[in-house]
Image (cartoon, rainbow, N blue to C red; front, side, top):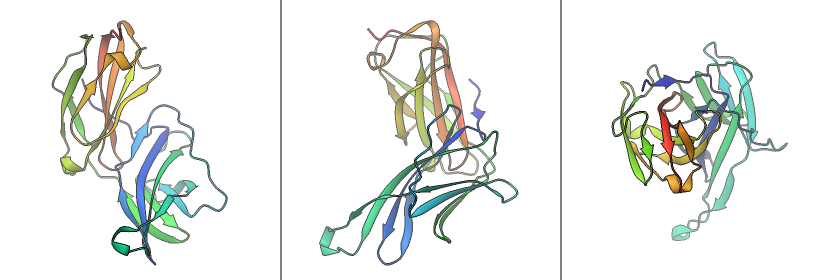
Length: 220
């Protein structure tokens, strides 16, 4: 099927890690996903240590969200002065907002800036066609192209809908390879032709998806 770019999904999901050893830095940050369905935003503690800012093409901050990281003390090799932590934040947007830049800050200090690249990933499912029936565990394969992002930097998420896209549940997340094991026994059955598998790809701030449609999934 065709690849669809979704720059105006209702929710942005941000996963990352921080390191503190006197100074502070974002040690790692996964590519961010924008999803078309509604997700409850992460609660904002009043005294949160960090905040995310999302900016539009004009450089205007359209939404801010405070958050904390789950910190732990590093004890390896006796180096107890290092603290590390991780965070997972859901940011909701008002209306149809295209995000060009995301900043992660502590106070007034910018720890990380992510800019949306010009090109988005393009996905093509190579192992299956629309309209098939899944009875047994099956690996779904796809290929990806992206002219301005290394393929090793792209992250995938796969979701399944038993009712033609009215509701979804995850199949697998944080996939680095372009394949997923689809196991009907762990998912709701779909009537003839109502099942749908949606494969998401993110290169940082661009989220795209492709659908495998008109599926019949027998979970028994």
